[in-house]
Each structure stands twice: as C-alpha cells, then as structure tokens.
Image (tube, rainbow, N blue to C red; front, side, top):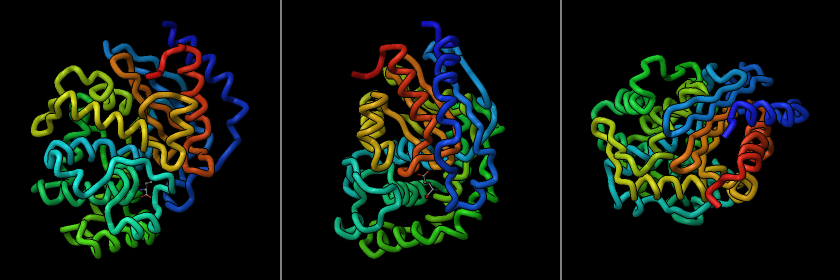
Amino acid sequence: MNYTQILNEIYQEIKPYSNVGEPASYIPELQKVNPDSYGICLRTIRGAEYVMGDSDERFSIQSISKVFSLAMGFCLEGETLWKRIGVEPSGSAFNSVIQLEIEKGIPRNPLINAGALVVADILLSHLEHPEEEYLQFVRQLCGGNKQIKYNESMAVSEREHGYLNAAIANMLKYHSNIQNDIERVLRFYFRQCSLGMSCRELAQAFIPFSNHTQPFKFDKITLTASQVKRINAIMQTCGFYDEAGEFSYRVGLPGKSGVGGGIAAICPRKYSVAVWSPRLNKKGNSVMGMKALELLTTKTEVSIF
Ligand code: GLU
C-alpha cells in the first residue's frame, strides 16, 4: 500500500475544510494553539511510519487519555470494573450530567467524562503514585519516551473552568460511585487529559491495541488479547461522543477523539493512525481529522467492515 501517496492525496482533498469549525473554547488554554495546525501519522504493526504536516508537534490529548486509563483500570480491577461502568454508547454529549442522574450514577461507558472519572477513582484506589504511574505507562507505550509530560497550565486552566466535570463528580459521589476525595479525582483526571503528545507518539502508543494478538505487557500493566479486544470494541461504539455512529459509518475503525483536536484510531493487525487538527465540529470532533480518516479507509478500501 502506498501510504505516502495516500496521505498526500488526503491532504489535498481535505484542504477545503481548513476553515471549518472552531477550537474548543471552554478550556481557555486550548485556545492558545494554532487552529490551522494539521498533522497525521500512520504506523504499521511492523513499525513503518508515514507522516505529514505537524506530526511532531505535541498537543493536548484530552479524552484520548481515557483509553490509556481504561487499559490500566481494566488490568487493575478486572471484570468488577463493569459493576461501576457500562459499555453502551451514550448517545449524548461527553459531559452530559442528565443521563447520569437518570441512570443513578452508573456511567454509560468509560470513554465519556463520567466513566473516565470512575476509572480515575479506581486508579487512585489501586496505585500509590497515580500520576507518576499513569505517565510511566503512557511513556512505556511509546518505547520509554520521557519527553511525554503533563501540561500543568492546561490542567489548572481546566480545573478553573471545570464546573460541569465537578458536577458529574459530585453526582457520582452522591451515588457512591466515587470512593476517593472528589477534588483528588478531578485533579488526576484533568492531569491525564492535559498530557501533551504528538501524532507520531500517539500512533506508537496505539500499536499495542492494534496488534492485540501480541502480549500487552508494560511492567505492572498487562492485558489479555481478549481484554484488548474489548477495549477496541468500546472505542468502536463509544469513542466519539454522540457521534460514535457517524464515525463508525464514515470511517469504520475503532478510535478515540479529544477536544484538543486529536483522533487516534486503529486498523486491527494492520496499523494505528493519529491525526490532529484543532478545529472541531459541533459534537466536539476534529473536522479535518474525521474527514482524513474517512478518506483513508475509503482510499485503502480497508476498514474493520
Ligand atoms: N478534559 C476534557 C473534559 O473533561 C476532555 C473532553 C474531551 O476531550 O472530550 O471536558
């Protein structure tokens, strides 16, 4: 497959969308990025990399971080995780509080904010140094890359404006689905979201999810092939807020987006791909990112379907 040519063609075809959408504004720090950035990295399971544009620029991965915390939480907690969180698409916004109230504090899935806050609570209960161990795990997914760091000003900026996430955390606590102190859970959660990674780094970090018949083993964090398969299934059905169906329809790959404008996706046993463009559509997904991945699976004629 000539991925270099395909990535070039994609770029030419998505250029008309370069002014569509706006970067997220509810986290002030996110507004500091150049809205016209665009980067992509496709990495095959054999380690070949194909890049274009700002593929080495780090950006705030935001909700993509929920895949890494889920991997840790699933390893540490096992099946009992699913007593506290569901595996159904939410069909509502990533930060919806209404659904959580109706469903009595059990989040629909681990990739919406409510679910990720419960996962954060689980990590806090299991780990002695949660922030360090989370960072260590992500670095290991990237071959021990120590350049990957939290962006403290991003985390602080989000906490200062994080009223809705605080409301969700309170609702969870009210329903006894958070065991630790709420402020502590929020602090961990905002930090994990603030992590800065480039498309190249994200593509590398997602290879173990793509190549899931190989052992998933990173120090303490090990998952069986079946557990990785299930995480991929959750990405497929729940990875794009209330646009998961649309992404599945248009792209046909499991993946996860973040309000920083990044999307990471996998083509099982073939490649992982990360794309970044900060302008978002109304549902919070990167406009150019979604279009790029739609063109990728159309041009390669390969998706999970
Ligand atoms: N930190 C963001 C929030 O909690 C993440 C949202 C996202 O990327 O979907 O609102």
